[in-house]
Image (tube, rainbow, N blue to C red; front, side, top):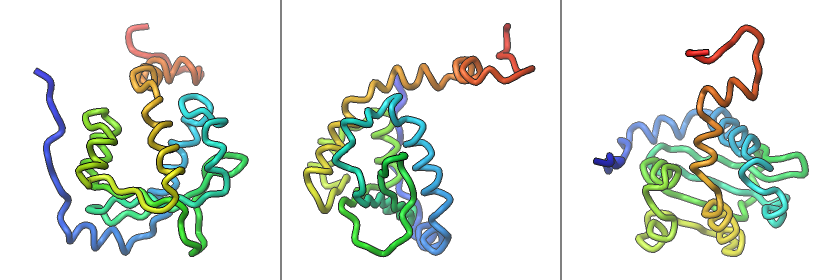
Length: 161
């Protein structure tokens, strides 16, 4: 029996608290993950229309507002107050469900659980790029044994070797 992510919403008090905290640490986490995926999972040439565009990911029930852009050297946090070109909003649960491929972006979009505001062409580009990712291959690459083998850290060996 396949387990599915339960429906949940984070408490409003948590969102109010997190919304007051510096947003740089979670933004750095997001841009680091995106940069690790760039050229490996996310084809840079397909993302070229995003160059210089400001994006905002809003995790509505967590109070997170992650502002970033794609530059020539990769994704980076954005600190200015210029309006974003594309805003993508959803709850934490729905972002996790997207990442786990339990929910389809179109289903979330048409049920108004995933909101995209701003440049619709950029929104479609982001959606289509994410749809094209081979998530199973990515999960295989992220298994601890494969990560350690790629890093080839001296003195560190996976269990069973």
